Image (cartoon, rainbow, N blue to C red; front, side, top):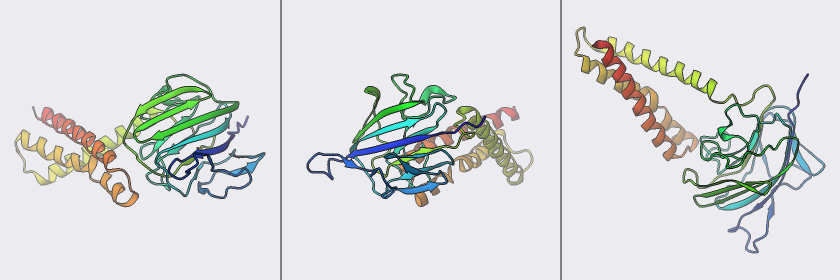
Length: 271
């Protein structure tokens, strides 16, 4: 049986600095996709006053950037949907939960820690609410570092975070059969990456160091090479894709820890 992912949105936005009267600005006119940029191959279409998709994977992205705002979205998704609203995008063409805030709509997320109502990697939902098979009201408020998410009148997130200050808004849909696989696949790929870095460091050490080199020298050398492998390429994303520097600083520190671990393992092997 083929399962179809369907979602629909009706969107309203309150941007205090843009609206002196304090009213809401309609992001979606209920008739067309005017005012949105399409990223990916989702078959977005407008019907019955809402925008939705049931095939493909992709985003609708606002051309304007927003900092402080309140956003209200009426959302309908089926039970298997993997969707969400991304705010303060750092890169409107390469959108992930690591370069923006993802307010998740994913009832059946394999790792339920950041399921429906969460901000992925930032705040777990305070209440377990399923969104599938019905209309839901999602209220997102971003004011400086203060982020609040309310789903159907229940506050699911109230957190302080300063990672992203401003950016466009994006709406996500994922094709069925390609759901978020949780941590399992990511951990497997990360293990392969660590193995490649370790083998590369060992190869460079074998070519650069003379036979009989001291154990500590081998450890220092493999650690330095591993640090380069784990971190150097990260900074290109800040140069070319406007990835926040704070994100790369954090990831560079993580890379340092992995490099130290690699050095320790190599040192232990020499004992």
